[in-house]
Length: 151
Image (tube, rainbow, N blue to C red; front, side, top):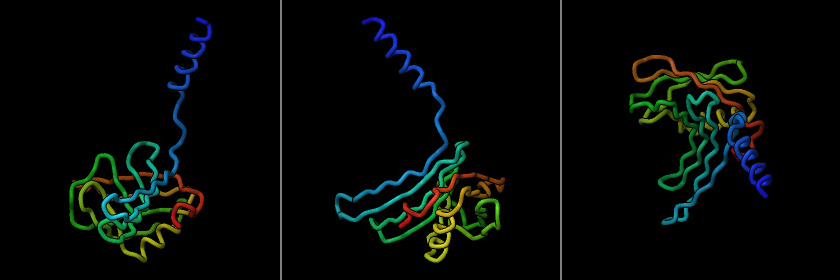
């Protein structure tokens, strides 16, 4: 009996010390209890912990679809500024995004449609902008491999 307990302990310790795999895309749906309206979010964290990339469809307050970047550490609210997104180290997409506090986002329907399509087809996504002091911020993310989460 003691042998089984020791074996179980060793397996638990090995499982806890095993390195985590690469970040993966996560899909979550939620329903507002008061209104019954739904929202859906697909996101991934950067492997180095530098931020999260989010594609969100929200209908709780008002219908909006957005692509968001939340860096670590988070950003203070600021005027819109430029971001650069590179897909598979190809041509960079440059656009002005909103910085309402915590991170950055675009909710422009045309931009979101194109970005979601490019994110879905990319193997790597690199996001560049600047922090509150103007220093560069860069995060890299693994692409989801398909558009299943964005339909």
